[in-house]
Length: 302
Image 1 (spheres, rainbow, N blue to C red):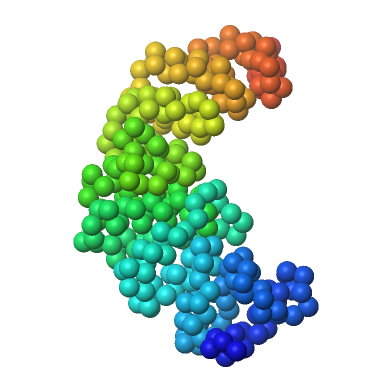
Image 2: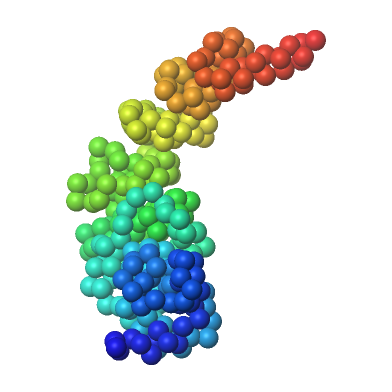
């Protein structure tokens, strides 16, 4: 019998509940060898009242993992000073990167943790802070919306030197300034990273050129969305000629959503000729938009 038996016994009903989700009538000790089971247990434990701090500390410390429940346990232990700096860094280095997984943390769950860490990191070295920050923002246990909000929060934190914030912004958008010492940024951060480069003072037309250069391969969709947003947000800072040039490039995109939006913006700036050209597009959604706009124009003239 392990020394954790008393702690597990204290949450027996909760263990039975999680086990039922896994198709068992009651808790089976072997389930504790499954990382996903343990993470679900931690998520339920996080929301469960009536557990003593000693038992919670024991269970969190023994079953913490890289999932959403593990991050919640990590934050709880962190707030109560159960983790030294080495353990914090070791835990963050073990997080799994990738697209947000089921049950990933929301903004409301993630941002308080990030704020706490940013405050705690003040005075630490650039290497420690940025590596840990990037690994946390990359975590698949954090939702896409939360990780982007976290990036904006970190880059708006005046406690980080300006050059660090610029470095992280370029890390997020995978620019040529990206530091090879940092892990490859999750693509869900790409668009936000480009917009943050502008907020940090870089000329919108320069950032636009960076985004356009990345509109190829698997990154075409995300980079294209960023391009469209830059064109919409900064029409005065980007010349009319450059806007048209970029929209014409988007019109040739392999992504129908990007082509449709390009046609819409070309119509707004250059006239109804682009409605008729949209009727010839290879995608039904683009043709449907063009047909609707043509009918609206006709009704308006009549």
